[in-house]
Amino acid sequence: MTMTWIWSGMVLVSVVCGLALGRGPEVAEAAMEGAGAAVQLAISLAGMTCLWTGVMEVMKRAGLAEKLARLLAPILGRLFPTEVRDQAVMDSLSANVSANLLGLGNAATPLGIQAARGMARGSRTASDAMCMLVVCNTASIQLIPTTVATVRASAGAATPFDILPAVWLASGLSVLAGIGACLLLRRVWRD
Image 1 (tube, rainbow, N blue to C red):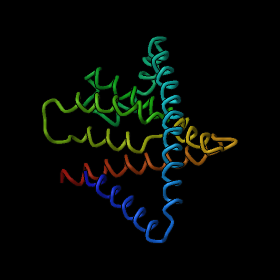
Image 2 (cartoon, rainbow, N blue to C red):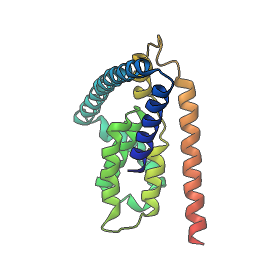
Image 3 (cartoon, rainbow, N blue to C red):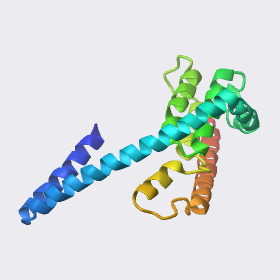
């Protein structure tokens, strides 16, 4: 709700300043161009999300999702030791990580929510595992940043995937920093 007020205030101040400076037609033209660009971006993002969500479904039906879950099991088992015995939660976690690896934050979010619900077990406070899930989901490693590449392509980039090395480095460092902070705070908080 707060962000709605902030965003609305920024738009209102921009319009008032534009009108006060006698640039009403430019403000109206910019608003129309911005709205058109937003619709075009939303359609391209929806198309890319549909494509990769379909790829995830094909992976699931072909059994690749299970193999990926087995591949990720040692890592996820160490990050979420209290959840190892709950197969449904581990499946949601591995699907969440898989979607994040493909750069599909929109597809990963429902899977993360499903995993968090399984972790909650009726509790109203966040467990260490839930905090780790939020950290890993927020600062995910992206092997294929499809959303960013789609935005770059729609903005006219000739090679939208030329950012891969920077994305790999930044996302890897952010995950390591987030996991390290989570593990450190887990120990500090208990002492």
